[in-house]
Image (tube, rainbow, N blue to C red; front, side):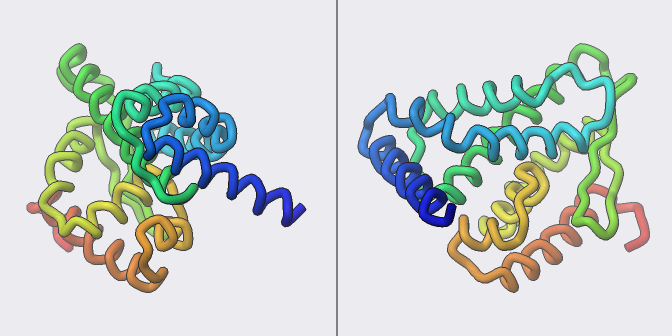
Length: 191
């Protein structure tokens, strides 16, 4: 079984290198190999948005794939590819929230939670859009950690691998970024 896993990882890496080299079909061959991972990322993300969401898990995976296929995928390995996919899912969800806000002008919008497993902060679609705006004000690595953890639902180990940093650095960046984001999004709330 371990040999199977290793050969699967080798195929993923080979296809990623081919995609970086300009092989447009490599991404099409890669997606089935990581589809379960992509589906799990999408499911986690949509689960945070509560009921009444018209975007389905498979739809989010396909929308993210379209974003990935439309640009150049420059990933070194499986974790790095999943990090890029998580960012694409973030973009899809933010675009979706903008469309819903424009359609409904804020009424009946589902809540989203910025959660690390210990405590959460309830967020409306408006807050999700605000989060998207303030993320760019974070240090680049902290922004990536937030994207991968919140939008990608990735664990510390996977984030560390994707970014080439230690798990301890991931934890430190998450704590700092989460505190800064909370203050930026909710300036009138006690900390």
